[in-house]
Image 1 (cartoon, rainbow, N blue to C red):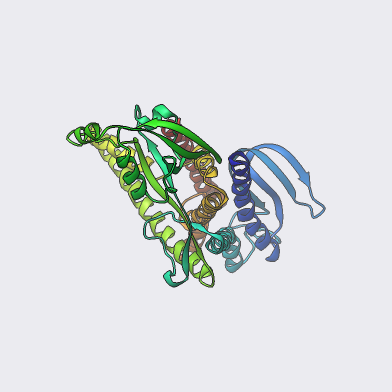
Image 2 (cartoon, rainbow, N blue to C red):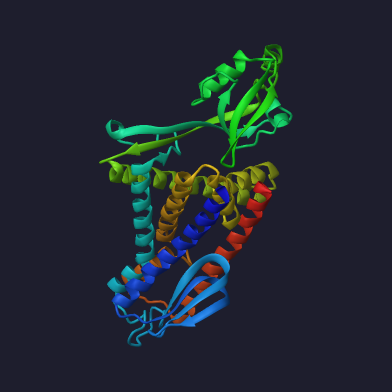
Length: 386
């Protein structure tokens, strides 16, 4: 089941790229701008089909996004049907359309999740308390301590702890898990758990009270079972589902900007450390910056891990990615929609449009920088997860 959800998650992620580019495509055609190509991913080209309308549909090899190629994309182009000849209002609509589509998708998905059961992702997650009920609550092993009773018995990270002991009630929160493992300290007990959607049972000999108490006096305190538990719950709303979607989106947007701030601070520490020869500051900055970002490899790992938690968590990941795409593409980052939009607005404000050559240089430099950043993030993700 988790493998099927992983495939569905990957297809939905690709769908976010298609939806984003379709926004540009649709808005361009509505404003009289000729579309030459609709591409999924970046070249080299794998597949090409020329439609009856005259534009090419292509599937490309590099899974780093997508694009819509318009006629005359230079801002100074005056050929009829070109992007350059369109009005400033039309250009702005075309460039912001992808952002709007991703935002709409995120809000629709979050509204649906609030109605069927939204996973609690952050501690103070936005809800309308009078219209929110906990529909599901479980305890997961977020971390399995090496050499612990849990690891020796075969428990893995993200396994769901269902029951401790043969006659004990189901474990629904971390406090119950701590209470039960303390109650059976030093004993061999039966643990019922779920791994990759399949329920299993194992015999585990817990640590003794003496072992646990002795470890508390060291820098490496240990538990009876040897896992770090985390609660996974679903929250359902009825009439307030759209309100929850908007409120939660606002929370995620704030957290995204905070993460970007930490990443920029980390980059500053890297440059300062390199300039002054302070290796500690450079390493600290590198860790701070890399912990706030993730690339294609990181997204795959998140989708793979999320698939084990069920379809609600998978849909939540896709909704969060869609919202993040909207946020990132509205920022003034060269090579992204926001970068092109802000450059266009700025040049119009000062009444000095860019020459085609200068516009190409700016966009190419932004694209190359973005590709290098993706490569660097991919290297960091590979080291982090593998």
